[in-house]
Image 1 (cartoon, rainbow, N blue to C red):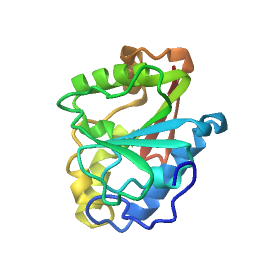
Image 2: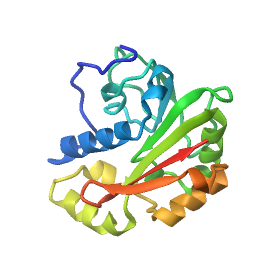
Image 3: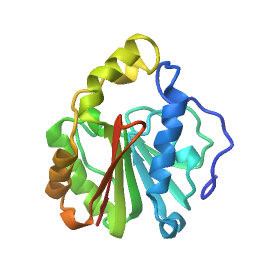
Image 4: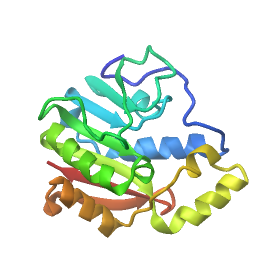
Length: 203
């Protein structure tokens, strides 16, 4: 249902972890807090949403788009879906100035640095002027802790074991700059008990 939160009950991530529903909710809440009300009459693209698009089903936008390597688990969520591997080819199949918001929630840790630079450039291209790129990722210091939490079943081992790259706030700022975003329009912070970073860049 476009423009409204879905009533569907769907899994929050791959694998199992006692804290995954809570963490997914906190991540979605953080992203929603960073979205301007004026943008919700437009279009959002969630990159790397997984086959269970928890955030997109819990946010309100006129039009919702998703990119992931997997097919959606539920075809009735009112989301236009594209199956792509952005690590191999980080090109977005959209026109310039198309989206009001693009989100990368818990995704950049899976992308190699070269692909991430190209993806940021592509994100800048498809955002409308004044549009926002919003991302979340684990804080660099929390990587070891997250692996221990996965070992005891608190978070999903399937997700944590695929963490390849970790980022600090200054390093994220460098990637935003390489993508074309102005350093003056960047905002950063922590959430989920300081375990995760959030960042928002404006075109």
